[in-house]
Amino acid sequence: MNKHELLDQIIAHLSAEIEAYEKSARSAHAEATHEQNKAENKYDTRALEASYLAHGQSKQAADAHVALQQFQALASRAFGSGNLVDLGALVELTAHEDHSFYFIGPRAGGIEITQDGNTVLVLTPQSPLGRQLMGKRKGDRVKIEQSGIKKEYLISAVS
Image (cartoon, rainbow, N blue to C red):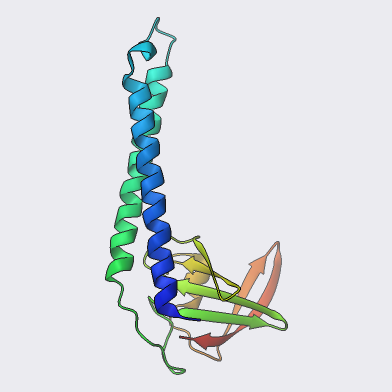
């Protein structure tokens, strides 16, 4: 898997996310300030609700901007077999026939990127699995609970 391409895909995903949030915020702001949405009585809250929506979407866009800047500043470094998992690491976990790929990023946990037919999930060091992986190396094991069942995974690669 090409980590440079993966990072470019994450950056493109965040850029598209920002554009969508900003477009939605502009639309909600226009709705909140439109003449037809002027309150007709004290129970008419259309404009107020639209302004709350515009504010929330603007906040999401700002958070995505910060994430984008942090990913753009993230140095793509190679991790050897003896290196500890840290920011910028691509980690492969294996349990029998099951292979999972994770990219440790500074923010934006939960983004899924597909590369070479594999799905890579962005994790932050603050997430439960991210906390387990940080400081581990190839050959170490982690336990993951899924649907109430704990499963042990081998860290089969750190790049």
